[in-house]
Length: 203
Image: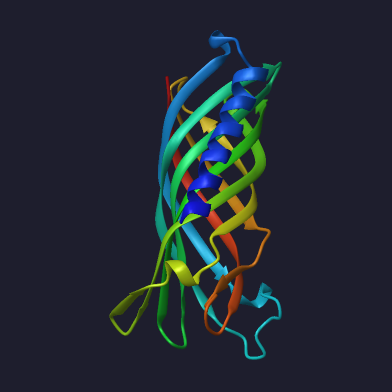
């Protein structure tokens, strides 16, 4: 837990330092909030080694809410760091085992205005595990300390600006690192795939 807290503090400090030192003109900044849904997939086929018997999983729904900052760089180019609470997970169909994992997420996007009101965005995302739960046959257990704590991913998406204040967007996140379940027992690994639908409010 101390390691998680240290990583969280370092991540926030580095992100704040980057935006404060490089983009220090207040008139070029916008702040706002986002809210929406995650549709995540825990893909065991991409674990190392992959399971000898394929593990079929279903996509799980979760919440994604957070704070955003939009910084104009030059021309049609922007940087958009975010601080988010993100719910991920999925279900193994054969055993009806449901996993729910909650993260503190720090995505940093490079954002480009492709056309009037249409933006493309892409960038890295760092996720730090808050807690994790496994449910089998209606019985739930806390597996936070038996689950890989960090997730590193790349996220890309598109955003449409309805008004200067409101926008809607869709994103796709692909996990880079393997997430281990059963760190203190039999390890199973997977990689995340996540689709997101969001509404953003900027002011």
